[in-house]
Image 1 (cartoon, rainbow, N blue to C red):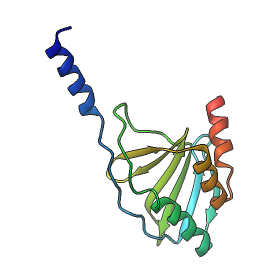
Image 2 (cartoon, rainbow, N blue to C red; image 1 turned 30 degrees about the vertical axis):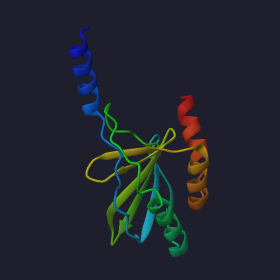
Image 3 (cartoon, rainbow, N blue to C red; image 1 turned 90 degrees about the vertical axis):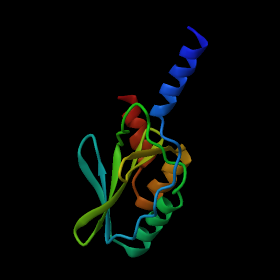
Image 4 (cartoon, helix red, strand yellow; image 1 turned 30 degrees about the horizontal axis):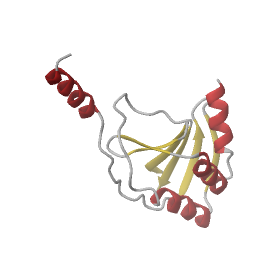
Length: 137
């Protein structure tokens, strides 16, 4: 492969990767509906204002470092639908060691097991165990 071909190939591949960016904060919803993707199941609805605010704080502490994978949108195992006045106004989801948001695109960022566990404790849902069980399938 010639040097020019190699440079062209690298530029082409890098053009598919979206640079890391920041997303806007989510506003505080009335309720957070936590749903498992497979099997489809509502795990919990968080309505307590203090718990809702704690989850929103968790999400909003992760505004930087989002990117769109070149290989396509990530699919989460557990989705948090933030609902205000009966309408979904934002989402946040958890997959195999990543977080995701649909905010004009399909954004994701890496997540450690510790971070997933921390969010699970705020929701009273064993998120890390759900992710691990999905990986074993």
